[in-house]
Length: 361
Figure (cartoon, rainbow, N blue to C red):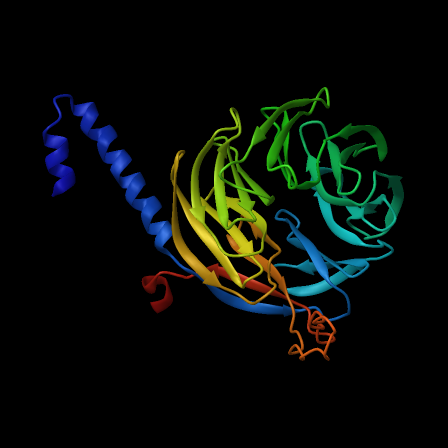
């Protein structure tokens, strides 16, 4: 009735049609945002060692998870481990280049990137990088890979086809997560220790802009909304900030949990995610290009702070494990970090709850 009355008050018939479309779209977006994420399943991985980045190749239906000194490969349709990529000392993660059937791992302990055949999971070559390559990104516009070197405070750019270094870009700070906009010809990266974002020209490999992230601080995670030119930054002072990727202006913020590591954005639902070590994922809806609204604080598990998103199914994946209960230290000694229970490493899978009507069927 309200929609009908609004339409009747318009003088031009086309105005009513446009208004109806806007209202229906808005209502649909709100409905989607109100569907809650719930735990779908756990994928047992096991093995020893910690974990870091997770990445999804939605087309190939593969999830790549760094674990210890290898990358575990999981079939996300069958939810089973199907292989592993070895000889990657201190690996932080893998950036898939789907059209080339290659993957590029950041091997932090040997200051190298492995070039991997994603069909055979065999290493084709190793490429020298800067010190401690950590974050990694495949940029499809130029078919190049960026290795962000933590201690080197630089980015090593690699020709993905040839597997050869093109250049190294000094960044002036410690890089973390990155995102790219191929149409705009830009790669973006968080400088965690400088409270800044850098924008890199993908053709010239020059830094175009350096933007402050205030009121955010110590950003690690990053995701991008390509349609609206928005970056989502997971900040160490318990904020997720939304930044205009064309101007560097922070246009919105929402509170998140403690110990954020990863961010994701789903264009299909307009949801932005921030995964935190306190055992929460904050899920916010992009109501407008200058408005974020928290729609859910998802309870996960302590230390489950790394995350990735499959845009096809809208599922999110987080690494997790069980840890032994901390013991009281002897007098004069510092408290030791809890030890991971052997073979307890797993992947937590969360998905949007199905509407009641669908469940009934």
